[in-house]
Length: 187
Image (tube, rainbow, N blue to C red; front, side, top):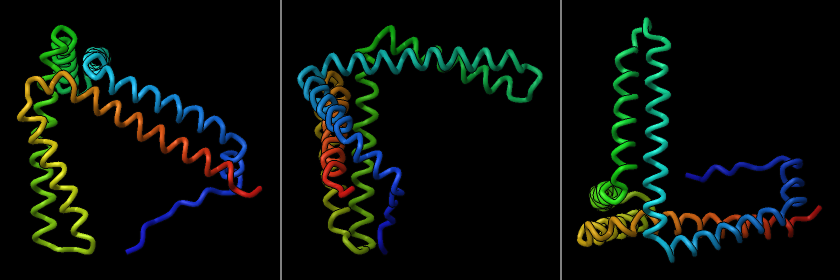
């Protein structure tokens, strides 16, 4: 089985080549933000939970307004209940962001433990091509879930911010590499 590769047309390649510096600058900014996020993972965790909570509140309000706006439509109660749920859960996250971070972190730990166990079982049971990589991925995911779970509730203070920081760093690195590669493409 071969991986599908999407080729850019000549306009896309030319535009990347012309604006390679923007990719590099944005990548460096993302690397810096990711490093700061790793250094301040507790603050980033709380900021992320507050942001998520406010998005749930506003999204819930929009959904509730939608329910009343189209109240004769058959989905009135579903939209109303969804809106109320968004407002309540978002409000709880905003009112108690630390408890929200702990809850979300516990869900992440469970997700990693179960997901890692399933990857390990499927790699060992099926032995498909390159099954060892899936096995290794499953072991790492399982161990990550166990580490987070064993340190819970303290891990609720740093996990989300650490994940945001790691994502920013990897995204920044990929943008820097995209920009430098685009610069080297022939005209």
